[in-house]
Image (cartoon, rainbow, N blue to C red):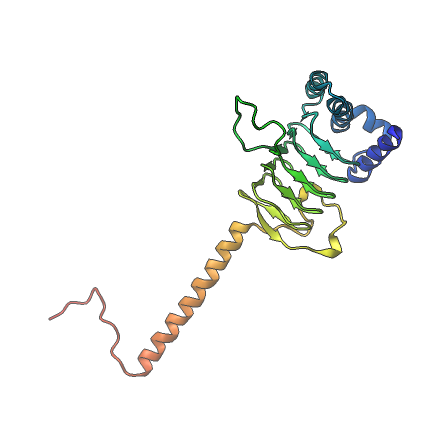
Length: 242
């Protein structure tokens, strides 16, 4: 069972990373794979009640990989961390199957620390459903849900639920591409579709420009009607009255 899961994880890296030439290269040279193996062990210890030992092993994994995964986080099958440096996954995070994270991704909480320990056991971190892709530098904050097959673009900040099968980008993240069933299973690096991902700010600017153009055309049309009706043109502000 353990070796079956190991083979699945290696196959997932080879499928999603074109730079991976062999399974041996992944085992020896991929920090994301190393961090995942360390987490599998530390999570088992955490569930078995050896919390301090689990944290120590997790801390050792952080030192050698620059990837921090709390042993309490639940991670599904065929999980891939590409590049990996700076990834942080909080204690109550839940990650489904076939999820891909890029470097500097944060699955963090938004609740402040408390001395009483009243937040122990509460869900404070995100849930990422199957087949989701989180681009580099993205921050997913709070007990929110990233839907199945959703994509979060690089450097986005997400504080609200993202529906299944959509692409979200920006700060705060906005849905910019609706569900496309034809591409639902297509892997897209960094969470950004190959045919381009529109900038929501640019979309807003273009919309305003279109509205201004329509208003200018309307003003010109009204001026022409005024001239045709024989009404006097408005007095020029610079003209002198005798």
